Length: 503
Length: 96
Image 1 (cartoon, rainbow over the protein chains, first blue to last red):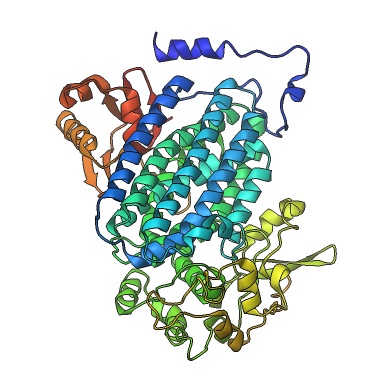
Image 2: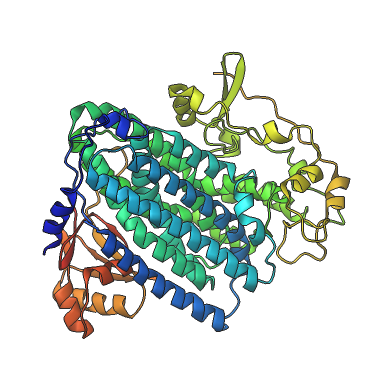
């Protein structure tokens, strides 16, 4: 029997129960008009074929892991490996949240074709978090300084830098379930994960991390189906004109939201955790996201009346400085993380100046200062030297230093006597559309204001087994490791900065 | 769209390896308009034409053993365009 015939036969097994209403059948309702639409499922996957495919993918992948564990294929690059302690810690949480989102969507959206795709995607997302945890487990056993990998999952839920990704997934899993499909399957998975899982797999391979290279690619092979799920959902919604304004609003929101979160992660990892470079993160993002997704996919929605997102030009111009602004935040706050950092050297400066003209003029000062604040004997914390951390955006949880600290778009508003701070027009607009969705997020200052830095590090648990040495270090190979005592001597008390100008 | 140019490239990115190499050779042999870009861990098969068709019978012939759509999907890392999975081929088109 042909797939299409079998597929129609399987769909016919679905039924509408007579003893409850369609609304009672679903856990949550949606504001979108999707009931009764005729979705197209381009993959037409059955459970049996799904299991066979995933089995084959796993067999191939785990054979490679087995070989990597057995053979000594050389030591991976330390800058990359240490950076991945932070990278993988966030990724596991994002995948797990995506599984939860798929469960919600499968219990909400009526057409059986979409439900089937979402259910398989839910299993995929669980597979991905397992694969990533398995890489972490492997690196804990094989990497020369495993500390940091051992707390990766917990750290993804507590570190200040991870707030950017936590706030993104919390937004995704608490939005209207069909809007979640637009945010997750269209923007995260069609626009951005190609760059992350396929583009960065080349970086992983070039830096000797074959384990992660294979993991990223086998994950993306599932994402290919998720992209099709996103298009199936979107094309179903586009069948009903009443959905167009709601789709536009969701596209406007998530284009900006994912640019500030997943997009920022791509830029940071692609520029600052690599040593062997071929393309800059800006070049990769322009090719994978703006040419391929916006030029190749989004533009085709114009015939349905979907307009370009309002901040598209800003998103592109952000790429000039985004990775550098993110880096001074992540490197500047190094004691609150759980990996070793590798500051920039002359080769990096030369590369960045070539790829991002004006880099040294705007960021050189930070890196010169960073280089002077690495020795614990000197006792200088870059965090204190630069005057502490900036404010954080209530929506995206980025520090308010974007696109570049000297041209930051930060602003504050008052709502019901409370002050809320934003990094940009985009985030302020998202907040004002649905304030209750964002008011509850606790940022770094809400949690730690008034505390001395070594107390915070202890509270986070980012201390080695001796109970006094920090997991994070500002250099790959320091003469002596920083301890809680060193941090205590620097006497840095967290103070909330003044809010920016009100708008 | 403001500063974005329309992009009509259709592509399939396969995980690097022996199978990907054989499929690339086949696609180059079958279609003049296909470009192959080797990026180390993955390989990209691209065209500016309307579609790319991966026919499993043709792939099986050059592989020297049976080759199913499931086998192909196991090494398809990602694609650009709109995909359609059929009984014995996978088609990626510029338009959905």
